[in-house]
Length: 254
Ligand SMILES: NC(=O)c1ccc[n+]([C@@H]2O[C@H](COP(=O)([O-])OP(=O)(O)OC[C@H]3O[C@@H](n4cnc5c(N)ncnc54)[C@H](OP(=O)(O)O)[C@@H]3O)[C@@H](O)[C@H]2O)c1
Image 1 (spheres, protein in one colour):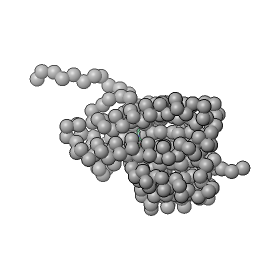
Image 2 (image 1 turned 60 degrees about the vertical axis):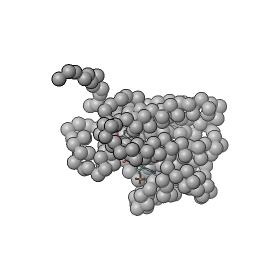
Image 3 (image 1 turned 45 degrees about the vertical axis):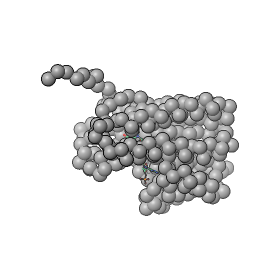
Image 4 (image 1 turned 180 degrees about the vertical axis):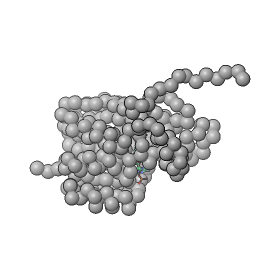
């Protein structure tokens, strides 16, 4: 029997890399993409004893590059069954009025345009695969709940949530499932990227609590992708037990 194929964006770190490992354990063939080629190479070396792995350097913001990577997939990797739209980032944790405009553009270009680029290109393939195919989009609790410093990041994940639900409407009858998985605090390279390399800030955020791990989310992505064909998880919001909401902030006279 031929292997099922998963196409994962942002497979070089965090959720994407853990998801690649989880699917490899179950024998899925993998198309792994990301910008850091050295990491793609080492993940391919690590997982090749378990399954067939094809890697491609890809910046999801570049629509032409997305077209090329998908068009040039080797025959054995073409019939993608599961797209994990994971590549994404937050930048600029400071208040909106202090942010560099370029950081907003980078988040929009990656989290929205990049996700749309890959989805649009792979939709015909996923529809051809039909029953059991899935698109699993990495949203965030930031797409649902406001917090200071979330500005464009949270708004980009609100796009992911609504795009996922809207896709469901259009894909009705094709068998293709769509899920917005919305994690809360998870320890990956996410905060290191958000703070542009401030390891101390990243360590401080996760210190003294129990964040989600990349493996926690990978397990849930695998669960969603391997449910019986007739089940669609629309949205899965997942937080660490040790994270919750806080009271409304109020501006008071000094
Ligand atoms: N960690 C959290 O607390 C958390 C919570 C909710 C949602 N999320 C979301 O989960 C997803 C994965 O984040 P993570 O926590 O695993 O962070 P991470 O460890 O920083 O991994 C992010 C991945 O995205 C890739 N990426 C970034 N920009 C890219 C681009 N332009 N083109 C292609 N790939 C790109 C990176 O690969 P390269 O740099 O090699 O390209 C990397 O593999 C993101 O969408 C994030 O917004 C994270």
